[in-house]
Image 1 (cartoon, rainbow, N blue to C red):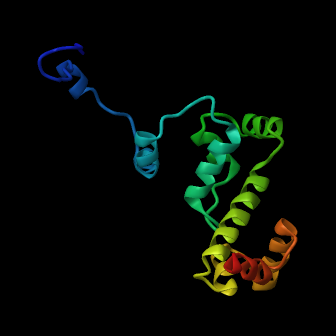
Image 2: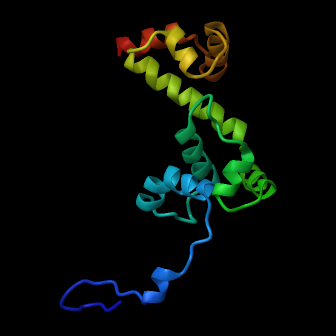
Length: 153
């Protein structure tokens, strides 16, 4: 690569084009699933492990949460190292999932475009009462009263 050249170009040795790739379909699918983020997002070591895990979990969403082993593999660490780093940040995968559920629920209730039953189903709760109990634990109020206060503001 030459900088300040009259025309931009990337010149490769022809042998690079004939070197066989030792990959399988699973590698390709994993790459394609992460490609937009891998291309657009610059990985910064200063970003907390919690933020990186949250980003991975948010991609899957409720009902499709990746296992700790999958998250660790994506971050190129062992599951034990992932747990240790999250512990050092005073959190865990389950706490991060709870935060995502809480934040998603609050945003949906503020928008008001979804019934509580539909929201509880979308978030993966077995029934609206289970969602209501969790929401009360997160915020101290029921989903209905929270939504009522949010729409008054």
